Image (cartoon, rainbow, N blue to C red; front, side, top):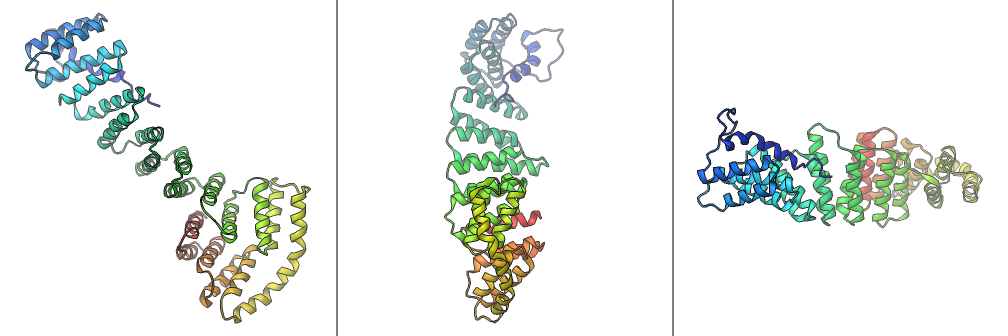
Length: 409
């Protein structure tokens, strides 16, 4: 995970300082000029020779002498610690490396452009020491300096998960996604799914909703729609009518998968008096290879709903007239449900609108289904308007999912 936070990169930064320490008159002038105090400079030069001879322990001893001297200036402190970094790398001593990097930063001589690299390495060392709070502190300092580093945000999100900061982890994933998008980059689908998994496993309803919406908006694949809506169902207490509308959206998104999904949907529709919809679901499952027509459960359901369809369809014109003359909208809504089940979305939308006009109905349920009917008939604007009228959970969230799907049509 932390391969990008290489400590060896710091060693390379030391090369330009070597000629100045050795006082080699033939060497080219360094890019950065330092003003060392003479006692410190002498010890630095000795330490450098020892490092060139691969005697890191001896070099470290000289550097310890140098840092014990009084009246050191900022350049002294900077170079002592930069050379201690090399010693720590050579000795494979993380404690020395961390001490040295902190000392270099404290000297005030680290170029501002280089500070994120130093802080990253401190974070990497803290991770290696399994001090996650300290690591997160350093990485958050890096992000304050480089707010567009969405890849580091993903690493931070994973560390937050390891540290048990689950809400913060999800927020970091979602922020990384947003930052990447604003930078013109395509976020990885795995980031969305990871955020959703953490939110759901941690029982964070608000974050689960945000991650679910983000996933199906960016990657509206059938499997993602199914996962998001199954999580929604499991996170809510749904009545049969709302559950049916969830199953309808899974079907609209081509997300029904396996015998269980198809049979549950068909049974639910059948129990709500919608034989045409139940049969259409069974037919779709059989055609898609998800159901076997010879299986007892499928045969029984098919035998139950098929004989009812002709009479049910034949009754609809009379029910439609009855709804037009009724004092309230209940008859119009139930007739609209039947038309919706048969896929006559235009007729269903007209009757749902009539039901709302007449009143006496569950406006949230009717507006949800009006939006569903309009979305499936191609009226995106009308669908979004109807769905925006749905208030109160869980239907309000379901309406938001339907609105997302409508915009993708």
